[in-house]
Length: 310
Length: 240
Image (cartoon, rainbow over all chains, first blue to last red; front, side, top):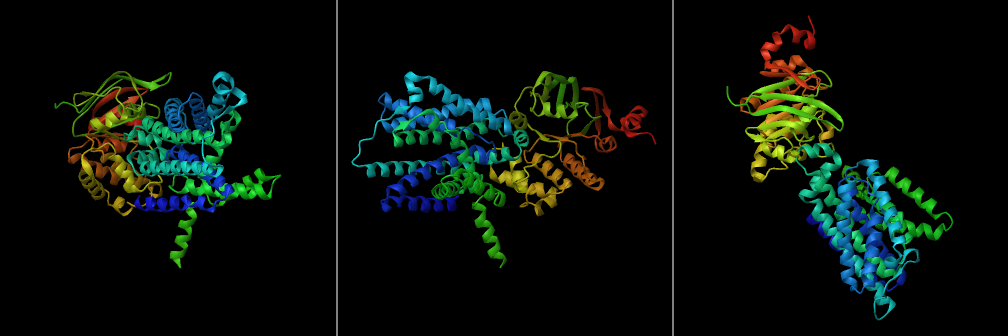
């Protein structure tokens, strides 16, 4: 655990140096990567540790984005709006978890997939509060320059990613994490040994919701304008899952490595294959998952083992 | 006769609309090995599941040493002292043998030292598990997995150990070895209730036997009497 914490500290410190580049493009990319990292790490709680394939990331993200935006519309200061959005996502995840986590496997996946769609329709129809399909504008934070703003949101996402990582590290090394791994491998056996599976699964689901909720709210403030199809986009769920699988499910650095790798691929492919970029991206992901089923993070172990043999 | 450790009376239980157990009553004598035999679908596993709180009793009572347990959660049942070694072993395949055993002590609050000494005891009882302690449980042979599952049950320091399908899919030699270990545990005072399809093995191992049929306990008594009973011989052992 100490080793993981030190590696993470170095990693986050290095990422924190990114603004020195001074380039707006890198700032935007860095902020996006950190946000993806938060989504992927959050999914790791429920999908990687407990083994429940949740597609609810988009639901938490959209909920957080709208909660933050609506709160600010009523004059709540930005920081409080973000934290409030996270708390709302936490409570929502608890209620949703109690209902959905009775289902297992594909059934759970489908049920969690529907949640974002339902929320999107609700937000669409509550025109008075949310602006419906017209979207919602957010107050632009008063800052000296566009560059200062970009730096501000970069550091906020960095802080959020660091908090999420810390929560993940603590959870993985706690009784909760041990219990979740047992649930993943054999839920009925875990039940039999006295693990309170319902409570544990709901806790994991809440952890997978709270940070995504904050990320959604920060994202809304960052881009000033949100609309339902944007923040309730099912791709947020899919990307989070793909990033974790790419990096290594259940591992500590898998989600972050996956987020960085996924975003790099996305940027690279987007630039070079403008017409067929999603096709090429999909193909690359299929290849990676086929040949590296335990994710990029397993590459270091493999290489290490080979080195030892020599 | 001493007060039985476990007393079940009039227990009804089942799944959804299907009732499986119909007024099951039995008394598990203290510090003895008992067995529960019966054909497929008689309700043996359902009774085990109801006992350990995995399914809820619809009516009737389960009393362990004066403590009512009907309707209790699996945690509460384990806490009260009933450990369940499930059918088909149900180990955590991708976790080490050692971690599997430690999981058995999950609910215990008596500190690492006590758990560590029990782990030592478990390894002493099943030396092969010590050799395999860092190996994934999924890589063990069937017999070793059953040992691991039993040892995991023991790590909860139970007063009553339930074992569902002790011999299922295991070689006769391994079954003999397991029976020997269970007798040793019993000599130390542990009460054991074994569900077993192989009636010959069950009657040899246990001193008290219960026969289940279509969700009811149809007969109970000393195993020795059963082994000599022509009706039982014909129904379960086959005539020679």
